[in-house]
Length: 557
Image 1 (cartoon, rainbow, N blue to C red):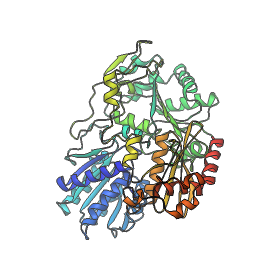
Image 2 (cartoon, helix red, strand yellow):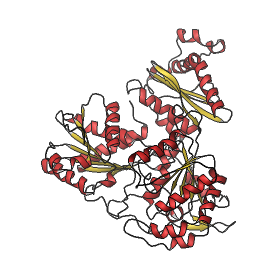
Image 3 (cartoon, rainbow, N blue to C red):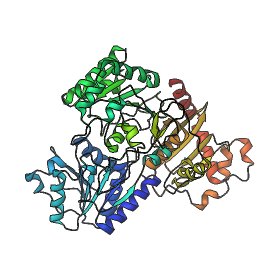
């Protein structure tokens, strides 16, 4: 398995920082492949010394097992073990542990000397359970390195992470992941249902705004009816997650959707584990279109067909807003969800979070917590709505601010780390070939796998196949998303030895054997290279299956 180009940079910076400082924090949002990257970092540290031992911490059982499975896929030659409520083994070179289990007195006493302690979801690292484990690891080995990875380093309780991490190795931004096709872009509409001024006066309590006060403002039938009406107009055909202020508020919102003929289910912390599972199953497998919740789905829940997020509560922290919106930003695997096409995520904000925080991007600081300072605003010349200065389109009336020349030149420059489509092609470990020289079909391949993107009737399709690999539809939608899916397919099925992008033999003339199998009009093309011929043959041999998948998915959609 190969890392994406941007993942390689993240890993290299993390390893360098660990060696220099003995600790570091990496910041990467949902969709970046955090588990893959932390697995690669761990492997590089463990491989340096034969006797090295590492532990990877997670705060939920499912994360522990997921991390272990992905680690073994990235590093099949490194032994692993699990320490949780069911299994308590330190036999592997890398052990995956549940924080709640390991931090208990009778369990932490069994912990061996570690060379590396990895903390997944590292914004939890200053909690008591984590701190006990960190102190024990340092007690057993003062040189034990501490590595944390998180999407949201700015904690809701306003505690900094400086006691554990002295530096930030790298930060992958949402903008990069959207530009590289690994997340879909959000389209945010800030909707005032007549209570915005009241919401701006809600007091803050220890963790966030006072949700009891929010409930008094938002939990009214006329407002709830207006919410459903706006949702029907802007996102009525989309799978949707709704975030409410209180259980009573969520119950009434769920009832309002159902009264309007929109099937909705309710999830909150007072339900049993099986009741929550049944509700989510109805949302994911049944015909339920909307799931209404309070704070249960804020972190760690990803059902990729979700393409609308409704915010019926404000958030005083940008990190919380990012987590909520992030539930709808993942791209879709058409093999898992045939017939579903997702190109963006609509965010309907009936609160004040978008106006307060503006961009979804967050600046990272290990010392000071999120500030209360509001993002700069501007007034729409058409409808007088107040929107973030960074907005290009008014979320209320649709007015578009034209870019000034200076803005165009600045924003259109490609930085080293902003992987636009062009940059993705340049950074890919594989060479992409425009097989018909019309920019409508691109193919790349290694020794074991191939992948391609194809344009048909206004939409892009990504297809992959290879030796002992079924030819599969990988993605449908925007060109960059399809290109990213195709590149990931190659990364998953090839190794560094087979990523022969720069090998000189690729540029040699096509062989006689290759020319024999090419169409007549190409046999006399003396400028055809060996790799171009190989790409053309790959398309030729798989053309029937590619067409079946593309046309079949087009009809299903």
